[in-house]
Length: 209
Ligand SMILES: O=P(O)(O)OC[C@H]1O[C@H](OP(=O)(O)OP(=O)(O)O)[C@H](O)[C@@H]1O
Ligand SMILES: O=c1cc[nH]c(=O)[nH]1
Ligand SMILES: [Mg+2]
Image (tube, rainbow, N blue to C red; front, side, top):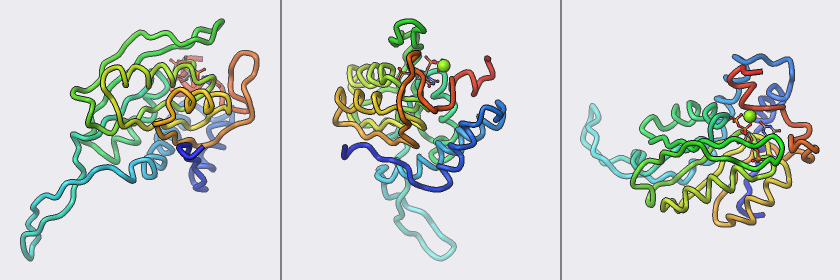
């Protein structure tokens, strides 16, 4: 799949291994998610639009490129996607932030929406959706559906760990987006958790279990 970009960088792989460890505590887990998001962002933001601005150096005035901040938005899927925002914000402090609140029903594994606020206007922006976990793909498909309904066009999705089933489902529903993924794991278990995975990302980021 052309639009699925796997992260091969050793720093990312090393940090993902630390995330998987059940003995990694909340503070370290949160820091690792932030660092991985920043490293993945370096790759995912390669084609971020630039605009020339005038700057006066100690020598002379020149035209020089800067990031067109109004052209970029980060949209985390709550809760776990929030953990990736600060890493991307460190790269582009002027980024607008939208939020999509979804939780997965424990029995049916279907996503339920409880909140949505996107920056306006959205149609011209590069939108990076963040969620560390892409399991069945239900939440990711729902989030991208929603962004498109609101006029979003240039969409990238960043997941730290994905199941093959989720990758296939997301790219089948939205073949036009680009998916940046830290690692594609083996499979989903009967409870739709990723194996080997890292457990429940939201609970591990926020210390709720
Ligand atoms: O691909 P899917 O099968 O839809 O599963 C992935 C979703 O499940 C997790 O969220 P969860 O429902 O646990 O909410 P939380 O982030 O609030 O913990 C995860 O952060 C994704 O959003
Ligand atoms: O393995 C999984 C699947 C869904 N959500 C998680 O946080 N982890
Ligand atoms: Mg969760």
